[in-house]
Image 1 (cartoon, rainbow, N blue to C red):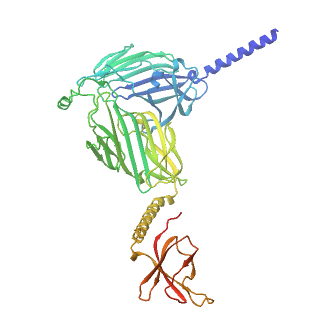
Image 2 (image 1 turned 180 degrees about the vertical axis):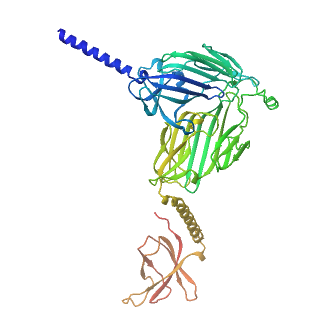
Image 3 (image 1 turned 90 degrees about the vertical axis):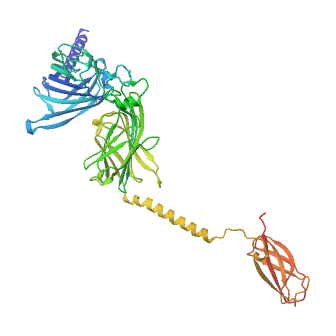
Length: 559
């Protein structure tokens, strides 16, 4: 009995030793940060964080992954994370952008979220590298007070940590925060803490263990407007006849402190530096060069308060809403413009066509909560696919326009929480046969041809109802000759007429007289042809032939 028990103890001890070895050899234990410097820019409603890390490999095995940690309250507002490394010295330096992807770890303390930075080359034991990391936060400034008057300044809260949250041991770290003005109501002190003008410095802090956290709260003045696009729908329609039509529908809101009280336009215009300092007066849209047919309107109609400046490299559209936007106020409007197709549509090496266009919002310094980009391909396009430099949701739709038969394929891409950094190019690939360009001209030509044929037929067809006067009655003559065995036609002689072409009608029979007149014989109703008509004729005189004048009175209705 003792041998199996001892074998189990040895096996358990071995498993625990292996688990301890794996934990010690994990990247969080192999790496350490010798120096970390963080700079936080609070000058606008988009919080920019610049992080410089000097990472050392203190383990015995090379590693190619570095973890970034974020508290769960910041991950919800995290818009983008970028990392790069600089190689070389002085004038021969090169910048290498690194891949950054979200990572899930099962043993994350306090629901910490992670992002993994993948190095271009593995970091060997004893080596070090310096990383430059940029990440942006949206909706991280909390207005306090939440409501302000027209002449009051806007104050906001910002919450963070004086210590950098990291899964690695940090030997030395410093944090700098830059406010937009010198008016700072209050801030948390974590010694050593210094303030000089608009900048506050936390640190340096020495030998802080992993996952160290020290919350801070800063209350300061920020009168910059907070333009937030709650929803933006961009539709890019491709026409192979040489034009690219872009339509953008905006739902804009001021995300700052809500306006309270009555708005006075007189005070707003007479003292703009004191009234509505945090209001949104105008917007600047950066459009592609060679733009044409630009329009700016809303539900009421065209808005004339816009200015367009173009040159060979860019086009800028300055737009003013119908009214200044204060905190909590909304505005919906539409921007449309045309572009030359040859600047954005190209052909790939595999004979496929692709559109190269920008993904984000053209409005500067704007946060977009939800963006939908729709690329309308020409009718007849096949095998569409989109290439976007960041994760988006994709699906396909069908849109019908003028003279469409099967509809146009629409590539729909959706993404939430966007900032100006997302204004990067994307590509939409598809195949298209030039023969489909003749479909609409042929449809138009056929339609016009059938229209003219119908007009000609209408002019040559008499659709009027004839009158019943004797002059308009159709007339024809029937001649009857007596058979050879009958010498002559006698009175009360019966004659048989076979009618094969007459429609069902009522006939009037006349016998022409010698004087040129006609003697009415009788009225006779006949059925549909072929039919036999039995006539009992009373002749005025004996003769070998009989000539009868038949007139149509009217066509009998079908039974």
